[in-house]
Length: 493
Image 1 (cartoon, rainbow, N blue to C red):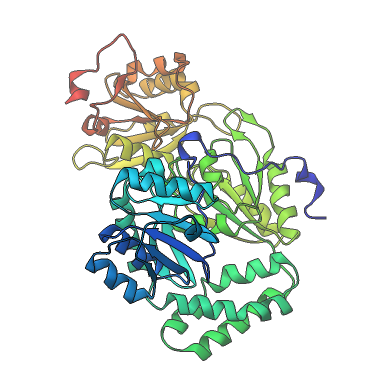
Image 2: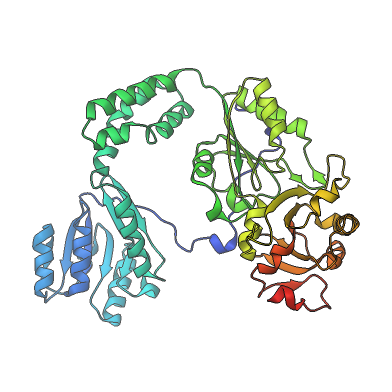
């Protein structure tokens, strides 16, 4: 049985990316070793394509009646064949790719049509409308290759990204990939099952083998690989990572969180975690929505604890993906206690919590010399739904108060703080969907705060920031809490 029965009904495929993230092209690598690739053209554009194709094992045929000196040099450099004449139909027989690089649109169009007539994909240089495929910016660390395309929209950007990746990958990285490939037969022989092999390779590329190899210690790299093979061959031990997804922006996910998502066999995620973040997990990982949202839990905390434990006991690598930071109003303490009680290996990966994301959105220093010297993160709801006590402490002058889950109790929150002595003109900011494209900023005063509870146009994750420090925030794009009322001058300053 692949997984315990109690979560199988909840499994669902990886969420489809939002429309704005869907590609109009599908990246693929053509096998060209020993096969013909045709380049038609006689100038610099053709020479550039010949030099690029010269990094492969293709048999390059250049067809042009007249070749400029730069093309002659490229042909000689890569060992291409030059047919000093116009393109003929039989030039394309058996070809796998064709490039039109004549510099003239009509001539390029004829080359593309001739290639298509024989089922050969064609590329016309700098003419995206004629292309069947785009030539990527290529990072060559054979056998490793990294190809970057902007689908013809911004080739200069693709080249800049290529330069950055070139700098990230040592020149000898291809040798390390070949070293890994030489281990493949031994890994296949000693590790039964795809999961054990995947576990080995996941650890191998993050292990000490790489730095040893690049330092010239190939024997040491082999010993490290052998040690990892032995570990992977031992019975699988489950592992749970409580991972903070942050406020929702993909580029705020930590590198460690991304690594755990790529290694996970199963991902239990909250309802507030965007689908685009869940999709960063391994493609064949199982996804289980556990539906944790304020006032609407499709699973009790006890059920979630049991799912984590069952998955780990089945030898799975588990990610519990939580919005924000697991340790800030994420009920991580209950899950950690359950994992410890059962002896399950685990780790906590921090995420950007909503209070910090909201502060960044407002460009608001939560502590400000001479204005705010203390910071309180609190929640609008206690364990049983009542608003929290100790209002006198929360209403202290010089304190910035960040209230999580405060929208539905905004009126009671404002009343309690006012009773405790906080002035009605104390600045208040509300941030909905912090860090996301659909974010909203609203500002007003403590006296305005009850209006938040009545606004049914605010449905996303919302954080309320209260205190004099709000007056220092960037509020140019903010809306008033009470739509009919203008933002006070002291807040707009």
